[in-house]
Length: 639
Image 1 (cartoon, one colour):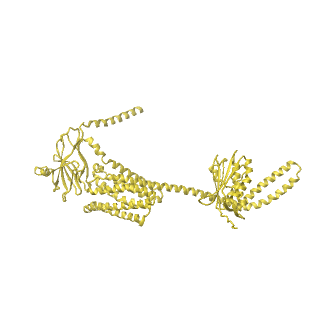
Image 2 (cartoon, rainbow, N blue to C red):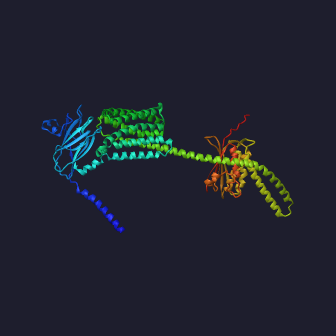
Image 3 (cartoon, rainbow, N blue to C red):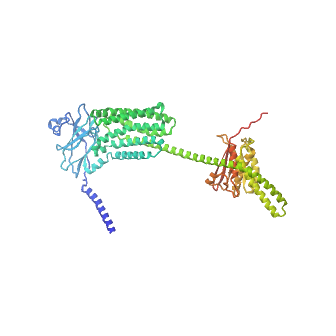
């Protein structure tokens, strides 16, 4: 039964899809091509209440003037707001005939066929672009269509073309006209809303720039969405909302742009960015107030439509010029963000400003469409800048986080060392004396022992006591690392002495020590303590060597800091990242009998000598110790 249900559902869906195709085929288009109507007639009408019967009378036949495609608009005479237009429909053989009129310029449009109104559009806002597709009946061939046009500003007439053809074919072009703007504008509005939600969860320091970018995207999306003629064609009932929403979006755009500029570049020279931002905010508030009042008062609406738009356009042009000048100044200073922004903003300013100027040159009778691509370039530049800032802030955060980890590790290490120092200072003295007494008695007993076995045991006990004494010495050195007698040490001489001491040990391990020394390298310190620290490091390298291992010791002057650098590099077994972090901790050692105190003492001696020590290592490739001291200038006596 379940399988039967599935088959029934598939069959029903198939029939539903097939019925859609059958419905389309029921209205199959004829093979006739679309016919262009290239000529029509127009006349002015002083009486706004005139009827189609009045203008179609023989007495007024001489008032009609012939127009053709491309030369179809009339400059509106003063005090005349109405014009009539008549179009002769040619003969046709169409299944579903329709008449398409593109870019018809008029605020109010009424179409008559056989003295009957077949289309009527009346707007109470100054939007005068119309795209009309008018269905015809099969018996309306060779008829005359009368069109009454009314407007109070700009030109009047057909800016596009008139075609006769199949309704479905004309409707495809009709539906596509302006839909790209709707999709693009809606996408930007959706993105802005998404960003607004995301910015709620970010830090306040990023919120200002993020919100200003969101308002810019929202304004641009609202402008593109509401400027599309698609909304006025398909949803005339919300046409007034669409028209004034465009004004609202354009009013919010410039304050948000200046706010973004202020976040990126500061207040600017003479606080120009800051001051213009405040001016734009004030203008936006005033403009919004007048916009709201215009819904109540027709006088205010007329003033807002004519003068408000002109003041807004002039203000935008001045602001664009200012921003271009400021960007040029910042670009001259090689500000990368200014260069990125100047590319996007220049494209927007040139394209948008040029098209706006052309719009007013054409007396508002021009459909602006290029500006949206310019402003998308500008938005791209803004997004790139915000992304660069976010990446920079993230990198800084990662850098500070690593520094905090280093500081915390150093703090923990210092606290541990302080505790051990106090413990070592208090215990070492109390332990060393009994050990020395015990060692002396063991030596006496060992000398009097008769059997070799007893003597062996005594020697072993003395060796272990000596090892314990060395550990106590390390504790005391760590607890009191002050260099009682310091002098200027010649690094070359000190390292050569250390080389002589350790070469036999390295040879026994099958290793080789090489030394590369620059001359005239001097540091202040205690020779014995310095040797103790470096011998500890080099001995660890020797013990980590395999067969035919090498240790390279290099000493040189850092050309930038003028400090002395000593590098001790081996190709031994290496260490893991976790081992590196624990170096210098007491009782941490990779050796079987190691205590970790030797390297701990080494760190403390170098620290007292005002130096730094850090290690780099890779498991299986070896380890490198890098020591840095402040260089001392040796005084040369003049004889």
